[in-house]
Image 1 (cartoon, rainbow, N blue to C red):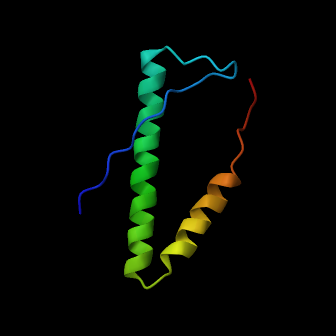
Image 2: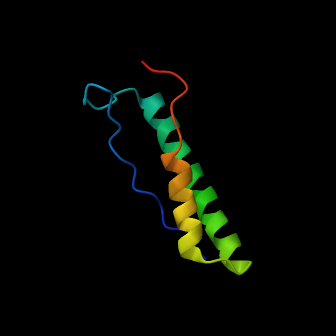
Image 3: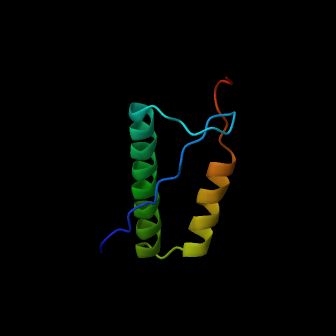
Length: 73
């Protein structure tokens, strides 16, 4: 199955201005690509094992919603 590519956002700083460092943008985009792949794999595995796709999606949302930055700028 071909995976859809993720459309990367314009990354913004706390001040609302776009991040301009190419290396930072590259790392952020790579992180998003990796997270998308892992989530897609988790959904596919769960469905293949007979789980409800909607529940798996809800759990992934719950997981993301529960994350907090370890530090503040």
